[in-house]
Length: 111
Image 1 (cartoon, rainbow, N blue to C red):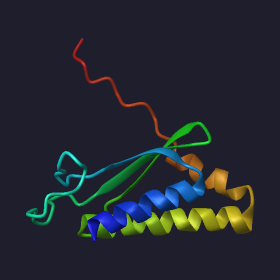
Image 2: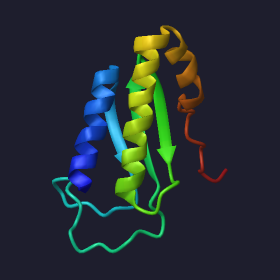
Image 3: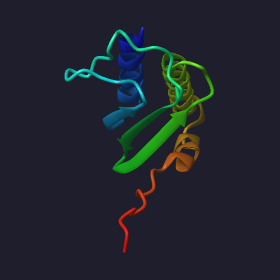
């Protein structure tokens, strides 16, 4: 189920025109990026997806549900809804994505 959700998420982002997709969660992955089968429920099931859209870095994150797969599914549905805006609302999609613009990570180095 996790692999299917990951593949659907990437496919939905590609349909949107996004590139350089990176998903992030607390799931431990093998070297081939497949989750280990012996993992129990995550203390933090939140999922973030980072991507480039029209040369702009974006990030979307969901932690509403109690499983990583559920949060990935929520991201899939949210991105699908954004694509519907593009199909039916024209330019409103770009405005909708302004809230997801990724800001640079803070510099945590000690002075």
